[in-house]
Image (cartoon, rainbow, N blue to C red; front, top):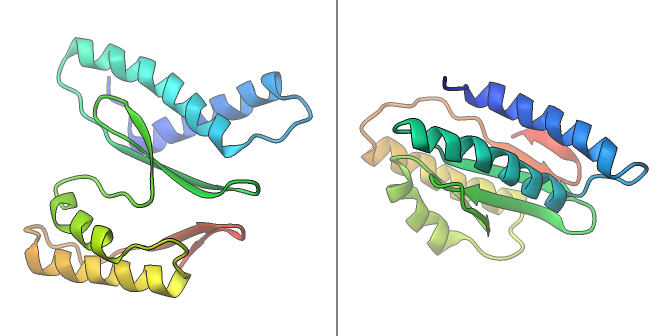
Amino acid sequence: MRLSTHATANYMRRQVIFSGKEILIGVGLDLTFVFVFVFCAYNGKLADALRKGPYQTNCLLGGYDKEVGASLYFMDVYSALSKVNFGVHGHASNFLLSIFDREWKEGLSVDEAKAIVEKCVAELHTRFLISQPNFIIKVVDVKGTRVL
């Protein structure tokens, strides 16, 4: 049985909140704990699915922690978790990773990041076979999550 991305995300959120309350009573959940918990919980499910048949998943996990700042983790097909500065997956990643690699720098402002994303959207419209007319750009920072 395959779970949708939304169902998987909700399952992980509930498990993190439940386990976090048991493990860290009175202490806030830091981002590293959440990412490692998701990795460990999802790694077992992915390992089981890989044994049963073809199964592929990639996941970008992002968030903001007061002590660490913004963090982005990429979980690949085999459930290896890596901290990254930017992430793209899927068929379009072949086109977009080169743009991020060339344009990304430490300490980007929101406007600079938006300009990079707009270059990526333009590249998709030029080179990708599937027409995707609408994109939603979201920012995760100290203010929370918001749509640009």
